[in-house]
Image (cartoon, rainbow, N blue to C red; front, side, top):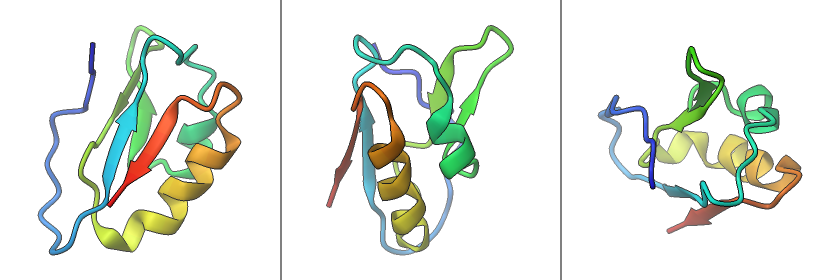
Length: 76
């Protein structure tokens, strides 16, 4: 089950984000690290932009690093 935000950012090169929602416990640490990519919806569930711009790579990698359950993968 994937809950991407549905908002597509139109930014040249892309980095691919994949969140294993079977692992994700919606702690929200990724939201603090990369709020342009990750957010919690009105029900407290994680939604995210699966194809953010390359300019957000460092923030996405930081979000993956701080995820307590290591549910975030960053793909090229």
